[in-house]
Image 1 (tube, helix red, strand yellow):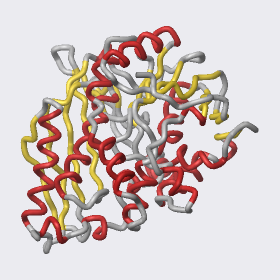
Image 2 (cartoon, one colour; image 1 turned 135 degrees about the vertical axis):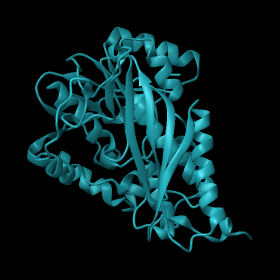
Image 3 (cartoon, rainbow, N blue to C red; image 1 turned 90 degrees about the vertical axis):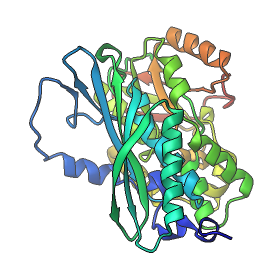
Image 4 (cartoon, one colour; image 1 turned 120 degrees about the vertical axis):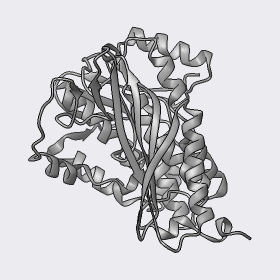
Amino acid sequence: MNARDKIRLTELAGCAGGASKMGPGALSDVLSSLRLPAHPDLLIGLDVSDDAAVYRLPDGSALVQTVDFFPPIVDDPYTFGAIAAANALSDVYAMGGRPILALAVAGFPEDLPSEVIRAILQGGADKVAEAGAVVAGGHTVVDKEPKYGLCVTGLVDPARVTPKANAQPGDVLLLTKALGTGLITTAAKQERASAEHLAAAVASMLMLNRRAAEIAARFVVHSATDITGFGLLGHAAEIARNSTVGLHIESRALPVLPGALEYAAAGIAPGGLHRNRAYLETNGYTRYAATFDQARKPLLFDPQTSGGLLIVLTPDEAARLEAAFAETDQACWRIGAVTQGAGIVVSGSAQSAEPRT
């Protein structure tokens, strides 16, 4: 048995993956008084809560820049590296961009075997290569808890950026991955998840959002984001607030990874879920219809790692995009709509959560 087999990486971390993200309320409080200089070529910066920065270049194109890293969400080093890379790359896809270059950002305990570190870095590099980009270097520090991720640079046409804004009343919400990675990986950390359930969650986290983003780029997308540490409602709320609109989410239309609701019913939940819920339910911002099934509430706030894209577009464009997704077996679910007003209303009106493939 080598070092990779002996070490349980998740035991070295207090929290895992997207659940390690700073809570939305605390982060908002910190950033609210942060003063940064403006720049005419900075098209998207910290003044809005978006997935990545966008900077205009002299030739008329633009750079997309993002960074994302976290503690281990699985025990296998190579798989951890690959998931962390997929998660970081996703921000570029969410902005309508194409990743071209990545730098590794990592912290490792001094006694972590070199073969484990090498496997983490290799997993990340291979996933970046799958995205058609390249890892050109990085930076590491000594840390009590292992952490790994990427700073990713991409290219985007400024006219084709898909920000967390511009959603219009009547628009449709499409989601491209099932929910529940936080619930399942927390159960796995407690050694309470079945191998089958964990395997399904890992497969979802390893899947790049590349294909979904490339297909969506052929259509008129008003807004988009990827679902990660703030959970479905946390990231959807950023779109709603930036667009000055409300949202209606159909809870029974939400796709669920196998086992996620079972673990939620058993009281298993990552800490980030509770932080997300507290923030989104403040002052009645999130409201629940009488038809809402309370057992599905954890899905709304579960912090995702390498989650799917949430794509916002008109009903006609949504129907065409769904047809294009079906031609390539890219799953998607119609989970709600944009409404007038403010806040999020969650109902249970949809009859099924079968993917439109």
